[in-house]
Length: 275
Image (cartoon, rainbow, N blue to C red; front, side):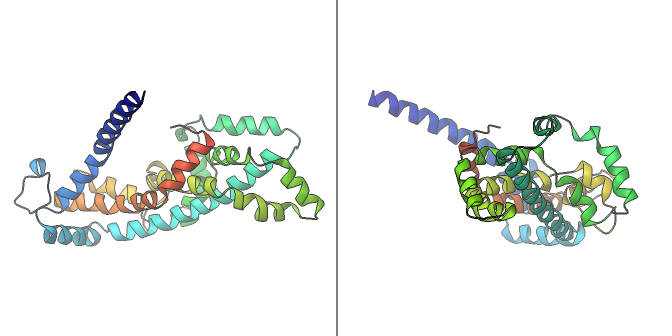
C-alpha cells in the first residue's frame, strides 16, 4: 500500500513539474530574449548572455515605447477598479447571503446569467454611456464600467455560506447596525475571499484590451493597448525592445500573484471554485 502511494506521489510530482515547466517556458523565453546580445539569434537564444544589453533594452523600452507611463496608468485604473469591485461585491454578497428582500431570487438569477454574457454584447451601449457622461479618456471612464463583477459576488458568497447566521443575529441583538455588522464581523471573516478576488480581478483587468482600447486615447495609456500598438507592422522598433516591453508589462501581475498565491490557492480550495 505504501509503495502504491509513493508511486502515485512520484507520478503527480512529475506531472506537476512538467506542467510548471510548460507555464514558465514563455517567461523564460522573454527573459532570455531580453538579456541577450544583439548578435545572438532570437529564435535560437534560450539562455541569457548579456545582462548589460538587457538593461539597456529595458531602459529603451521605458523611453521609446513609453511602457513606463502605460504601466503607471494601468496600475492606477486597475487598483481603483479592484478596490471598487471589492466594495461592491462584498456588499452584494453580504446582502444576498444574510438578508431576505423582494425579488431576491430574480435578482440573483440575473446576476448569474450576466456571467454568461460576453462583453461584446453590451460594449456599444456602455461605450455610448461613457461618452455621453464625458468620461472618455479618464481613469473614471475606464474603471467604473469594470467595477461590476458577477464572478466576484459569487466567489465571496462561497466564503459567507459557512458563516453561521447566529453571528449576525447576535450582533443585531447587541445593537450593531447594518453596516457595523458588515465592517466588524463579515469583512474580517472574508479575508481569504477578498484576497482571492483581488488577485484574480487584478490579473483580469490588467490584461483587458477591448474596453481600454475604446475609451483611452491620449491622456490615459493602457498597457495592453501600448503592447498591441507596438506589435503593429507600421511601428518599427528593435525586436529586443519589444520583448523587454512585454517583460516589464508582465512583472506587476506576476509579482502580485507570487506574493498572494498561498491565499489564492486556499481561497479557491475553500470556495470550491474550479477553473
